[in-house]
Length: 413
Image (cartoon, rainbow, N blue to C red; front, side, top):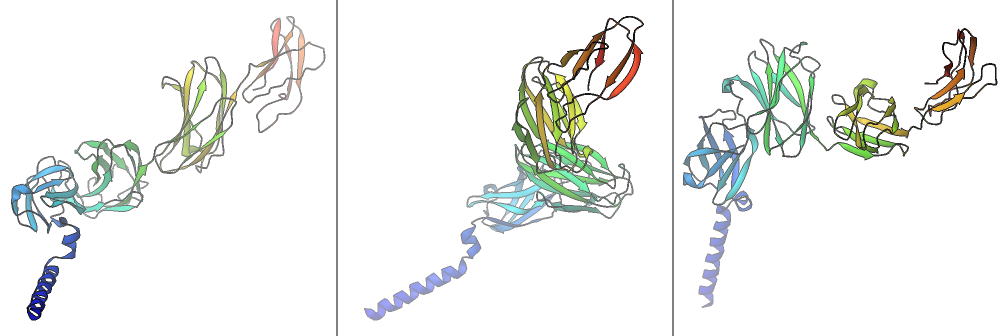
């Protein structure tokens, strides 16, 4: 009995060892895998070959999609599938679903937009957010295709730089397509300085395609960088309240500062400490409770101001800080609740009167009584204080006839 038991144990051990050898580790971890897809560029009606493992030998038991569009499986083995690309398929990864599970290719298959053929595509590349890629076209009348994964609710901006296609914006064009093939960005020309495609909201999950299309005989390359743009930076303040600083971190991101205002309220807008690099590298604008423009955009990459503005309605107002192109930075926003302008009476030949303003954006008005033909010399002395932008006087002097019974003598700006 002991000898028989020993032979049985040895036999079981050998069977187990053979079993371990026959089951590759990758198969044990990934029941289904897509190892390769050929060719890399196809159009509708053409054939793709998908190799891997975990497929069903029954063609009908495998579902193959390209960027979410279902293809037709025409033949199958456990390691290879032959599929026909359907009309409407767009560039993206291939996913295979079999009775054992599902797997997606590591790379993309590229489908040129309508009017282009497989032969037109010279280079392809899959982009990663924030990592520069190169679209190169060395032969005239060819194109380059790039892909970038996208998610509904996210936002995308694109920078094209260091172009060698030519200095004119007619030398090359860039377009961006959604997963369903519709245009997210229509053909936009760019020259040697490139172009920045400002933030677009993505409304569908899937792979988005970038087409770089040199025009005529132009050849060259351009560096392409995609950005996953976060939500706009936000802050809140009120006229007379504390200053707030907003910061953008990603090309294409804006900043919005909100405040509540009332009808007739007078507000002075001060902006300072901008780090965008130059005045023209960012703009500011103000919209009212209904979304309409209250103050049009002005350059404000370093500092700027809007003089006193009377609000036309009660509600929430928005100040938009809009960096231009790829620039990012910070800007400090300070709002002042401006009181009514100061009113002062001056007597011709009498004692001097001091005109004082207490809040940036506030003016002062001095009036005096005069008669027709009376000659009056008006003298201003004093200093202008900074940086609060309040003033004690405006220095000037003149002799002029009084033209009315009551004249304005001084109004510091």
